[in-house]
Image 1 (cartoon, rainbow, N blue to C red):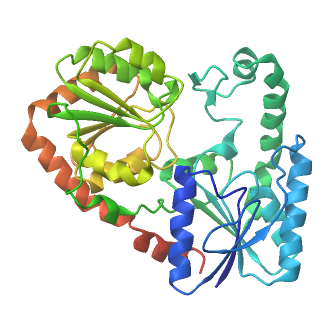
Image 2 (image 1 turned 45 degrees about the vertical axis):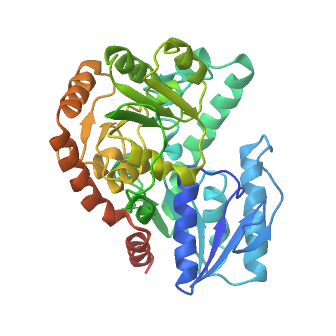
Image 3 (image 1 turned 135 degrees about the horizontal axis):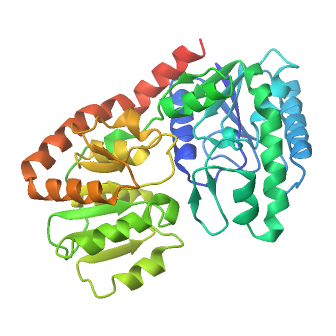
Length: 379
């Protein structure tokens, strides 16, 4: 099997990019021929370079330019599939493959396709439940209002095109449901996670915090639940908290808890260090307001046998069985978060039991299992 991947660049280490790379590396190891069409060299893979069209302000023109690059590559070399997982190349991929015998694979790892009916984050970083015209106008810098209105209209006009893809994959039942709402059928396939990296308990982080340690790992911004997190920290004055990550709310949070020796901020850490932070932690908190397309942090915590209290929005509902291998809560109900955290802090036996159940469950998200399912989807 020969696959051409269409990506903007190789440098951005998002959760979706990590999942994509794990999939392609495993396929290559199994003897499949994997190529990338990108603006930058992809180490370990044959790369076909194309110009960077990200700054082209007219989305229809950008779409056409990327389409021409795909068609140029397909005319020079035969491929069985062209794979895309972002709006930079999705519509271009669908259009380009229709002129060749190559099949298109469109993989939705989040909700970008549903810009019109989706949630919205303003320039102020605040999360809104509805991406309405009112919110676009009220919560954007003046210089960005027209752009966001235009993008809103563009994505709405392209929804019908999605049905023309040969294979559509959604990363969770939540994404699958969103696709169904716009009339697009997909096959749900959870992202792969390198669970083996989290199965050892040997490596930990040196810290002067007293156990039990409650940890947050992620972006420190309002949409990830920093207001709820701050409220919880204030209420548990004797509990140790480890805050791992960067974001626009970091300095504000540090100022709030500057007099608390039991609250530590690590800043950005390299992804290779993350397993050690899970092993150091007794409980993981993930109070995201935004529905996650998947929920990688839940799988990582579970593989580490660390119980997680998580938002009940998006893909987290597929991964966590509430009360068994984790706890799912409404991120807008502060009271239940405090009660659940207090209950877990008081019961080491419950933490251990949830951690063990989580580790058992995490194996289904291994790269090997993901690739087996992926190959069945595109048969």
